[in-house]
Length: 316
Image (cartoon, rainbow, N blue to C red):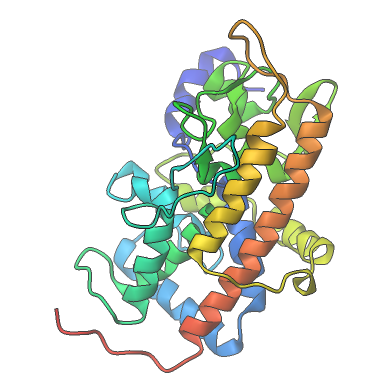
């Protein structure tokens, strides 16, 4: 347990911004994807990560799995890509179709832009092909998180829905014995209902925000174990439709509406909602499947991009 006298110091060192999946979730997606790559695609991805490390000079070298966290890690130095992590498809209680949210910076738009950079269709002076590749690793994970594609009015994808029985050391430290619905869904794949609380099956480490790669490397044993378990529980044969970013967003939107919001236990008098065992169990099953599916789709996409002759950069 973190003593109160140390809480402020530790709080200053941990990574706080809202994510889609937490770092473990993103690394699970990329590990499952990496397991699906052809030898050629693996070699080209590893080469791209080596070039990224040479340019970035991080606290420790990224590898192809940990690189899925790069887009969150750089939030401490730039806000340029904050809008790329989600899309605001509205909460639609009447069952109306979600509109196409792909015409401005958001996660659908971001995936397509990265694909275009990698295909040599466009040039962005701020994003080279190696960066576009690791951004793609991250964004394909983001778009499969249900509350990164839907929201109730003035709720910011669950960030304003307080949860009264969310339990884990990170939630306690950030929210002082509480949390919010978005935070829950970021780690729903490892949530379990125990003794009336939505707690975790295993904890994510707190780490110094100035040394994120060291923090990510500390959980690589967990990543390998849990990725193998998800691949066994949700084998690729279960999934047939590769789809495209808009399809993925609409899938997540439907799940965010039905499981994220419609099934949410009621609260009264402005009190934080208490998540039930049924809600936690359904969210965990959904999140596990979405992480596995994101991994398989990312693997297929990376094989298409990397296991083919490289394309030349167009003239700006």
